[in-house]
Length: 251
View 1 (tube, helix red, strand yellow):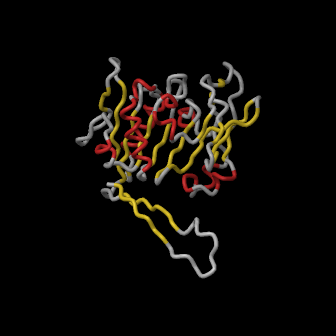
View 2 (tube, helix red, strand yellow):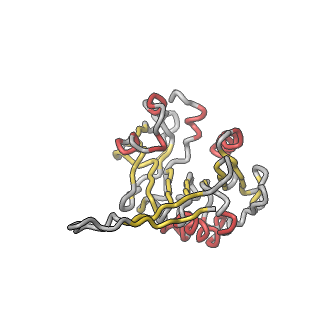
View 3 (tube, rainbow, N blue to C red):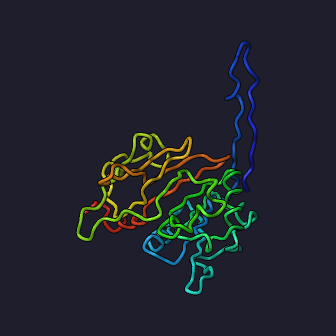
């Protein structure tokens, strides 16, 4: 499960600013593999590739659900005794939750509230989004609006014209020092372009833009991350990252 501890340091003699003398630290006690929950809407390109990668991962034990033709959750992997209800008790078994292209109805308010609590107590939430998730009846219409790392997103994506030039993307300076992009610098030196971006994202206070796209209207955030409570939230404002898998060299 997830356990939170408050670490306090006594002020030094003459110390006038003690605002940084206290910090909440979250410790996740898990199995030898990090447990991850991935919940997708109706299967799409992202689901196909991400499911394959997650189930093949040696360091991750993934539980996957997707939305079936009748609108109800279906198992995309062995569930390991976890229900698709995403109750607070269910979520204590996971370190990371990934949400795909779900609207407010598919997600449900009860599951959104559980996810907010999951983040507050130290969990990591990744919002892949899509046309439903970032649409007029998407995540922002649920309690997840409290934890979003950006506001003001336009609900209609900018899309590259058929046969036109896709949007080039690049890491920001903040991303180069971020753990998510640490390691092989060469792998991030030239990122494949994307076909769509949901524009207008204004980062929340303290949030970091990690990846951005070049559009005719200027640079637009594509990946934004921030800390919320004892946890972390990252949002992806594009529904064409599957192209990175199909065209890893950006061709």
